[in-house]
Image (cartoon, rainbow, N blue to C red; front, top):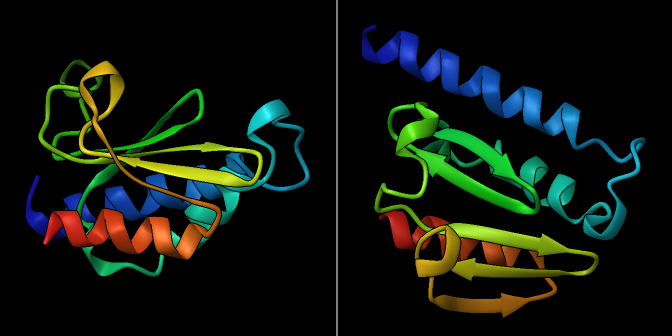
Length: 116
């Protein structure tokens, strides 16, 4: 797969996640927080080159799109809950908190900044 095909595939996955986490669905304790973050994320060119995935309340990123690599790659992640966001240095238990905020734009800016 060449770079253009990969980017098209990633963009499609981002669009699917935005729809899957839409506000019309009940997501329990995560509430609309993850959807707000995803809506902002699709406007970030840096993120469109990476494969997005969600695991419970976490937005993670992958360079391969292979679930076996998730959590092993050196990308930050964002956890979401009703009204809050925490940017982690890495997904899962090894992810040290970097920022905690109630603003999805601030969380996203931190995530993108860690990728640059």
